[in-house]
Image (tube, rainbow, N blue to C red):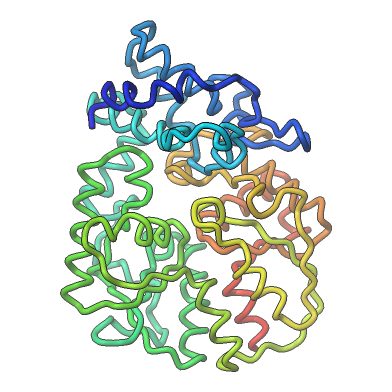
Length: 396
């Protein structure tokens, strides 16, 4: 759909915004909401600002130009504004959702070649290499060397590792921890190895629809060819796109994020956890939480660990503040370089709990929050650990 036609369809929405600014700060709780607005402090960098831009474009008062991309690509697509917006309660227009609008506007910027260089480079790398790291497919499974991980043939589960789990050293540690747990529990699983390519979640969020469609069609065809029926993902980003978008291209497999699978293994006694004296706070990933309404599985795991005390940050579950890595920003870092960068804000919130460990369930969150703690010079005070890493430590 052309963006002009799309804007025509959502006219009631782009004129309905009352500039209450709840998409920026929750007036009810004086709680920060929007990562990009916290970073830049201008109204344009908010859902209300984006609706203003859309209205001006629709009225012909503003022209499409590269400068618009600086605003539209700053959004992490965390969905916090959509969660907060009171308009959902009395406006039935399905398009009253800034992230959906931003994605459509990004698609137009892509088609016009008006995207920031870092976004262009990301998309080019995925197109050429199947991953944003410009690494050859032959190295995709190097993280699994010297471990008991096999290529998928007819096992019960496919473990989809994802680009960050395959190539980022922090993500690789998480992937190894999870596979160790699956092996200990006697789970039948395999990986795609060099046949795995990007799941397309960030490509979709960045507005490159043609590349996104190619990735989805390729993956769906590959999964069908291999007879995949059940998929476990390391990343909430991969889980999100496979759960919500792949079925539109004929996908017929069940997909779970690993935090949805581990409770089954713990409850069945396939993983036995020893007692530990540990104070933990948990960061809700946006693509597991607000995008898919799963706030409890990770907490169930933490609460099942003997001796672990879970302390919540002041912003948690649907109100959790984004780490800043979503919407492609993990790779483009358009929000970094300031004490108001989202990962530093979230790091300070974690520090305030007095916890020993900041638990995460996403490889992008792990990297973003570790960098945030380092920037705050607090990385020795509180450690970032993935849920799978915590469970594995409790198994030892």
